[in-house]
Image 1 (cartoon, rainbow, N blue to C red):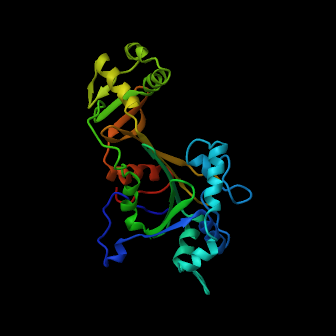
Image 2 (spheres, rainbow, N blue to C red; image 1 turned 90 degrees about the vertical axis):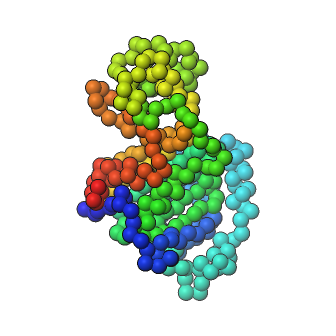
Image 3 (cartoon, helix red, strand yellow; image 1 turned 180 degrees about the horizontal axis):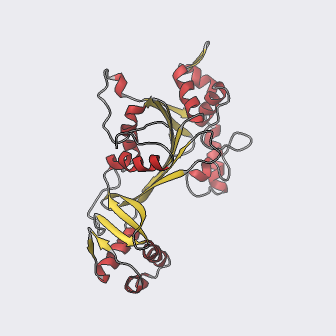
Amino acid sequence: MVTIDLTTPPAPPTTFLDGMARRLALTLPELRVVADLAGGAPLPFDLADDGSVPGRGSLSGRLGQSRGSVEDSAYTDALGTLHDPHDTLRRRGLVGDDGPDAGLVGAVGLLATPRLALDIDVAAGATQVKAWHRQDGGAVASLSTCDGIVFELAWFPVEQWTTELARVTAVPEDLRLAASHVPALLDVPYALADSVGEALRSGRSDLVPVLVGQGEGTVLGDGAELGDADAAAALSAVHSESRGRLRILAAEVSERATASVGVVSWVLLKDGWHSLTPHHDDGARVAIARVDPDDLATELAPVLAQVGLREGTT
């Protein structure tokens, strides 16, 4: 049983370089070549059988809705304009006569053989990013992309993981934050939150007051019970203000036949990120709480415990 503490600030680095992650931008063809040089290490997403355009259930699907034929063609054309990956890797000094860069191969190898895996999906405004974080022992490797063509590969000591996770929740500069109609802590029956969302998606906002009035269970705002009008406004705002979402799937990778999976879900509202935490208290409920970007590591700690890892000193 390993111990990972994501809630205690990392120790100050002894040198400037110790406190930095090493990052490289790699195109998809370059990434595939490096994976081949690393002994055929599998990447954390699927490629089409011919190794070119991702298909259904693969990277294409992971980055959002399925591409139409026109978008598939544009994706293929974009890959076709890239230079030969063997040449570009050599010109960049990442592959030499004695083989590929050792750190690069080690990072790709860690992506394929981790002890702990985090699959991260973030959408904010028009931007969507898919990232994979893989950890084993004192090292972490991460891979991320927003278009399936160019990837950022990074590797760093596990003590710096908290800092790297904070990068995941950075709100794009073009999304300006403003006041929200959602309380800092909104606690609602899950069925009510779901039915209100369905009504709004169907264009039946007139049904929201009826659903709130007839719903079972109380709606709490910052610990106090809300009246029907305030509850309807707050629940409507949760759905109407949504500008993005974050989901992290965490799993321990081991020799066990089955491995549990933990989930962290956030939604981006007008005033920033809010966590979504289901719980059972007089029925199924969900707590929607205002969080800071730096809170992600703290939110992950109980999830890591859930999948079989101890969260250190928390």
